[in-house]
Image (cartoon, rainbow, N blue to C red):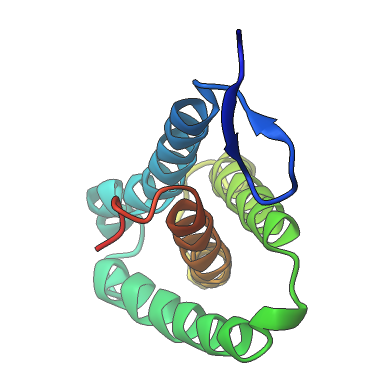
Length: 152
């Protein structure tokens, strides 16, 4: 017998390993959301070399936070109307695009500093904040529905 008698709310029987597979997938997705922003912070020394006048480490965090909090407030207000799966997909797509555009921006400017590339990096930092707000609530909410004992 490859199914368990317990139901997932729709009357369909569950397979025994689905819960753990879903938890592993959520862990990998959560790790992916951490890696994107941490990679941006890890190259802070490089940004200090490129933009010595602009204090990039402080500014990037200050640009990131208002966009993350503002997006989180909006998503919290409209949470009943938002599809969580699409919310997660939008967040991961934005993370991928912003990470890719950081590389493209550096290659296009040949690693030269200046106000233009700095504004571009600040814009991408805001994109990271928006993407992070999409993912944090969505993944934590999905994880809570799958396995409430993990979320405390």
